Length: 339
Image (cartoon, rainbow, N blue to C red; front, side):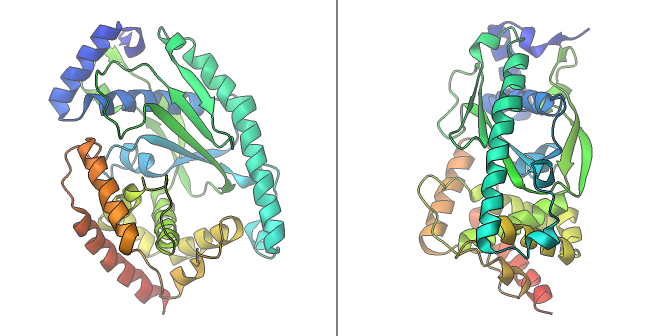
C-alpha cells in the first residue's frame, strides 16, 4: 500500500516537492499548497451531517474544469441559503424591502458563523490532529466567522511573499448551489508519484462553471463601478479567470443562457446590492468589465505580483490581452442584453 505523503519525514517531503517542481516547472510552494488544499477539501466534504454546499470559484475552474492555468490558492464554498433558516424562494425575497433583505442577509451571516465555529472548525481540527505533523497545524476563524485559515507546516525554504502561508476557506451563505455536479479532486502531483498516497477528496459538490462565469461577470461589473479599496487589491485573478472562461466552451455555453445570468443578478440584488453595484445594467446593454484610472493600475500591479510568485504556472498572458478579451466579451453581452 502506498505510504501517505503526510507520513513521509519532513526532509523527504521537501525532496519530493523539489523533484515535482523540476518535473512540472511549478514552484515547490505551489505544489505543496495544492496538496494541503486538496486535504482541506477532502475533510470539508466528509463533514458528518454537513449542510448542502458547493465548491466554487477559481480553484474549481482550475482543479475540476481545467479552464485556467493559474494556481488558485483559496477554497470558496457556498452554503445554500435555504439550509440556513430562510425558506423563502427567490421570487418572494425579491419582493421584500431593502431593510428586510438586509435583516435576512445578516441572519444568514450569523448562521454561517455558527456553522463554521460549531461544525467545520472542530471537524477540521480533529482530522488534522491525526496527521504525524498535526501538532504543527492550526485552524483559526476570522472575526466575521466566514473565513477559516488552515495553517500547515511548510517544507519549502522560501515560499515568497505573495502567496498566503495558509489555506483560506471562504464560506458564503447568501447564494444557491444550483446547478452543480459531483467530482473527485486530488493534487496535481499525485500523477507523478504512484508510490505515494495523496489526499483524495471524493463526493465534492461543485458549482456549474456556467454559473461561475456569470458570477465573475457580475462581480467584475460591480467592482468597475467603484474604487478598489486598500486590502482588496488582490483581485486581478477574476479578470484572468473570466478571460479564460470566455475562450472556453464553458463561456460560450453560458453566453447562450441569459436566464442563468438573470438568476445570478436576482440573487445579488437581494443580498449584495449597494448604491454602486448597478447589477440591472448587466442585462440592459450597459455592462462594464473594463477598469480605468487607479483601478487599472492596481490590477496590473497585482497581476504582475501574481506572475512573479509563480502562480500562473508559466502561462504568459499579458493584462493588456486580458482586457482586450474582456472588451470583446463586454460588447457581445451588451449586444445580447439590449435586444
